[in-house]
Length: 452
Image (cartoon, rainbow, N blue to C red; front, side, top):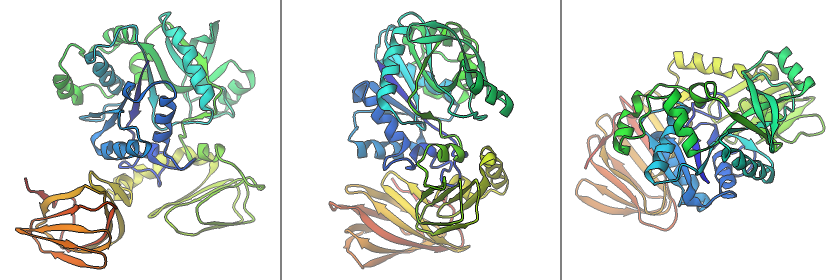
């Protein structure tokens, strides 16, 4: 078996914790590991590292590789999309890679979203193994969770006749009304569509040829990638599932959730005696049935709150009743109209050298904490519109300013003038931590000139 993990996203549904630069698969809500890391660990229960391929975007590649390093899973292959084009092209890229490796058309391929919660890994593994038998009989296999409540934000699968350990799919029902969702739960015979796909390589090639002919698997990988940005922006569900035949579904029964809203976060976390979920530095008085979530060291206090979702991030706060959880995207849309950077960027940004944390900013200054990993460097560059003061908090920085190279230690500092080339290297064994103070008339990220 080969496994493709899809790791894209827009970072809207769990705003303000998730952002375009840091979508929900990288959040650490349910454990000390991210949803992406948990997905990789589940995949490793089925196959070895070399059998796993992650499809991600360029802006997430450094986060992905860093999280794989944390797991000690450096053998996982990471492929970067040249542009985000939804799940049908992303799956096609993974298939193209497997074909270039010379994989057999009988090989089973499992496609996993990277941002789902699955509480019972043992049952997940059992379900996947059951599904492999169905792929050998020509089925495209889905996985469905028994509805725990009438969720209107999920797609539903109507069960047909039984086949081995699963059922044939009679039809799909997309995001029903509240009344219909309640009927599905009451009557039974429906499963939540988990968005996990399992198929043989030969079967999926036939489906792409019939229903998504814009994909040409005969191209070289270089040409495939060059044409990738021009493929239709369409999901695997719309491009393939809704058009093909012979689809089966295997019940999962593993505590699955796509964590598609803050209400889903609430439903999947432990409650106190008053039905509250509390995380971070929080105080609740006369509060019931609510999610109270604080990140970034700020205290969050709630008094007399009922059935609400209150989320406090480092730079934004969201408050809503639980039944409005699907409306977060409306807030995101309004902020996009204002071109508010808090839609796109989190205060913590991951980079090839490590990470940066925005501490404060104004119209003509910006203060960041910068962490450089051992052996990494901030490459030779300069800025035309800002100066920079650097203060070393921990570790040792090897600094190059024009033709001069010197070392800067804890509680020492150095200054970079406008248009002055500089490089900062971490030659030590521990992370290099610094405070960076930028000052100037223009502080846009495009005021960076890399010097080769």
